[in-house]
Image (cartoon, rainbow, N blue to C red; front, side, top):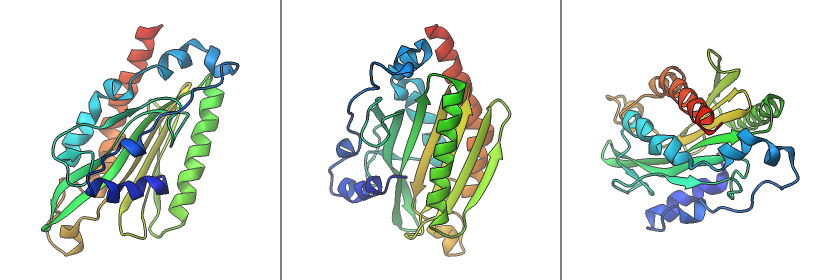
Length: 233
């Protein structure tokens, strides 16, 4: 998770929204192999939020009550294009989120669901390895880091989780299929119900959410993305 992105919680709480955290920039160099590959060209032009149904399955599973700030109600995540400020290689559907009541306090966080197209399976494997290494580096800064590998329809996949210095659970899910990579980057408030020895205050527990990502959400995204690739060819 980008450290600067976490600072946007404060901006959102002040009513500034996510616009400053979702800027877009230039595109891939015209002379690169990726720019000449028809699958890369098609994928890089997608609106990720359209492809990913505005993250509605995640909204339902996590009980998200608002997008755009930790106090928002309703709304939807924002789309980011190739060349965006925080992850130029990826298209994404992202947003700060409001998880509602948390033992009488608010709960929020931020999620980025990113699709990284490349020119070949070999390039995608390199992207996967780089992103897993980056997530492992982030996790190593804190205690309680855990990882889980998965495959099934994916060429390779890893889920990493840890709790940061603000006691916020962090999760990154990275998976490769052929010449594209999926990268989910999430952090959110701790569940004060569980921390206080009560029933969970949030709509999910960490273990439940992690398993849902692997067993339910990722297979759905895998099917959707590959169907959309097939339609473009």
